[in-house]
Image (cartoon, rainbow, N blue to C red):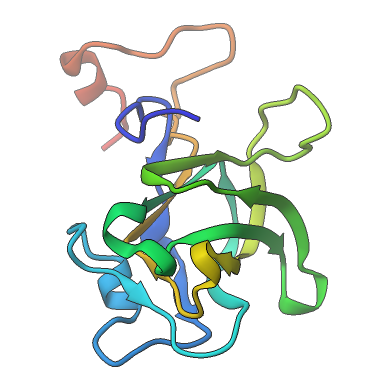
Amino acid sequence: MTDVDDLSDKRDVSSYGHWSVSSYKQGFGVDQLQSDSFEHYWQSDGPQPHLLTIKFPRRIPIQQISLYLDFKQDESYTPSRLSIRSGTSFQDLHELKLIDLDEPSGWINVPIQEDPDTESSKPLKTQLLQIAVLANHQNGKDTHIRQIKIFGPPLRSIFEVEGFPAFSSVEFQMHSTIR
């Protein structure tokens, strides 16, 4: 898993989706989860599994999901087992990854690709993404997730053609688009 700061080949597509959660305690909802502060977090309120759903207006390519978790601060509220699911609607959701975590602290980066059984690095195109918290450390009931970011491939210039290098200088990039 890579450091979240190594994003030269990715762009944040988190804001393109409509986010919802299965439950939350007052003052600890989606807005806190999307905050850029690690002091804010989503806290669920109810029976497991706790669900976080992101619905995009159209199919969008996804390369990586990054979650910020902090076992030292959250202890029994820290997820220990996650399921990442994808589909075009709730009726065709399928599990992409099942992740077991052991006292995570910091960014957990989960690469997402079209076909996980091959070496392909093609991004997954999805319209509905769901993260399910199946279990917490120390058998905790509610969960804390401090941040989630969703990354897709970078936007390409209309002048980038396969076999030709992309413009790398700022001056060339400024003149690479049609007005």
